[in-house]
Length: 265
Image (cartoon, rainbow, N blue to C red):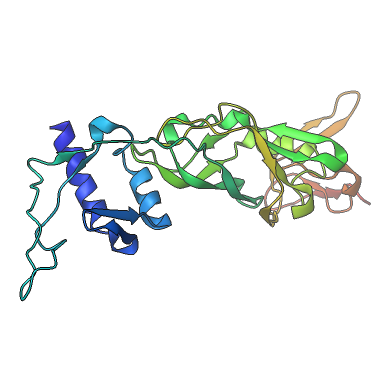
């Protein structure tokens, strides 16, 4: 049943092979050079990774000979009795990260790969945001993949940066505050492709960047009127302490503000 399901999936993908190029070395052999699109589609699906999951069927309308006046169609091979592969060479190329985008506004990291990878294999903690100029390097230790899980491979992956990781990144100023301050690095065992090959460790600076446009919000405050008297204000994001002034801070007795006091006066 499993072989049949895999085989039926292969049939669906094979229907797109028109984009690949067929060439004949002689009258008995036809080579089909798979297009980039078809190769990626095949790698996305859990098929043709090994000889025991690689079968072929042929419809009569697919191929014909040179007979005149009417060419003879090829003898069909039924999907119920497919032809097993005679020789199978597995994919040996490791996947690569070809592009990345960091959105500081939504705290999302988007990765694009050279070939499909398995979501279940991703270890986000192996990813690091890096700025060499100031020797800033922050691992995404608590972040997680937000792309929906799938048994098939994916070419694009989104990582939602956790609040704690985001705060660590912000504290590593100027890391991830502009495109020139945002590089990506990754270690071994970050992920594997659909054939089980692990990505090699590496680094890239060819990413895009979306700036943070979200205004920090006050989450709460504490007032200690005992010695030493202190007002503590809590924010949902890292703020620049040097910009803090008391001019706009008002303490009052109630929402209606019967009595109030501006700390800047």
